[in-house]
Length: 176
Image (cartoon, rainbow, N blue to C red):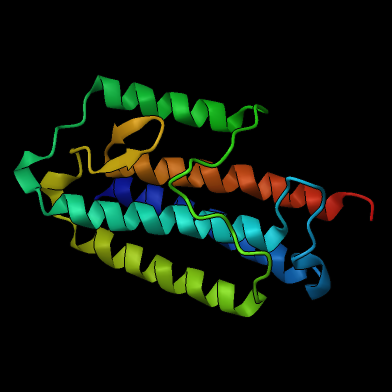
């Protein structure tokens, strides 16, 4: 795997592992508790991240079949990717894009973690088999920010996970 791609993958895995570590230290009865109206529980947030990543993987698997017809990533892709990450790092709140599933009201912790680990194995297999010629092509499409390449996509996913990690941490650290 290309060094930059491998690094982006490792950062994404680290973000997931930090979230799982947080989930594992929270009492089970707290994981599905909704902290306030219009807010998600810790496991709903994790399920949202999984849904986002899964839909992204499905889309990229479909797009990789286009091969040479995929647009080459350019300065516009890089700017949109940077702008998306900038806003995700900001305190500005966003609603999840409507293309994503609304999380269920309840999840089983171990089942969700296992499903996420399996989903990540599938993503790693995809990345490992991705032809080098596709790495600088706009293989990913964010519902708001548009097209970007695989490295930019992984960096977005990491920033997205880190943003939600902070949200989960706020739930854990808030007085009960």
